[in-house]
Image 1: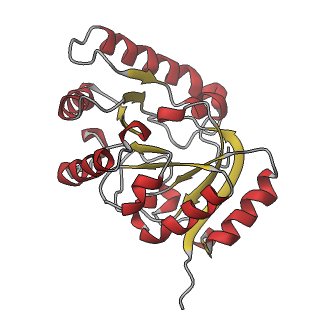
Image 2: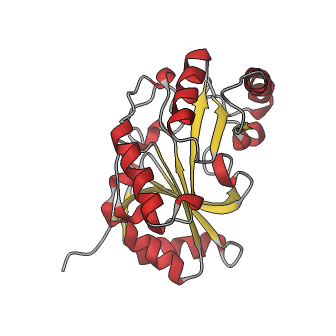
Length: 244
C-alpha cells in the first residue's frame, strides 16, 4: 500500500492568523507547496515559483503531527493549512482526520478553484477568489459547487468568503461576489503591494493608509452593508518575514 504523503514547504508557529474569518486566532501553520494560480501580488510565491524547491519535504500525516508537536509542544489547539493552494491535494483528508483525532481544529484557505470532498471536514474554510489585480480568472462554477456542497453537508457556518482589495476594479469584483453569495460571511482585506520588504517599520505606515482607504470606500457603499474590513494583520507586525 502506498503511503500518503504531502509536499510540505514549512511548518511553524504558534503565531496568530493574520487574515480572514479567524483573524487573531492562535494557530500553528502547515504550508504546502504548489499552486494552480500565479497571482501577480502573491506573498508566498516561493511555494510555486521553484525558488524554494529544496525546502520541500514529502511527509506523512503522522510526520507532520510529530513536527507540529516538536515545534509547538502543548501550546496550541488550532492548525492552519495554507499554501500555495492546499486544495491541490485530495490526500489532505488524512492529515485533517489525524488532527481532529488529537482534538485540533483545522483551518484552510483556498481560492476556490478546485473542489475537494474534505472541505466539509474543515472547521474554518476560507474561500478567497482572486480579483482582477491578481491577473487570474476565478472559476465561479467551481466556487458554486463548493458552496452548494457546504450547504448540503451543513457546513456553511464554517465557511466564509474573503477578497483581497487593491483598487476600485477589485471592489467591483467584490460587490459581484457578495451579491452572488449574500448569505456567506464576507471579508474584505487590504492588499500588500510590496511583498519583499521585511521591515515592518517601513511597510506598516503604507499598509495603514491602504486600510484607511478601503474603510472609506466600504463605509459609503450601499452594496457592501454586511461586510467586515480587515488589515493583513501579520504584515503590520512583522512585514513580509517568513515563519511568523
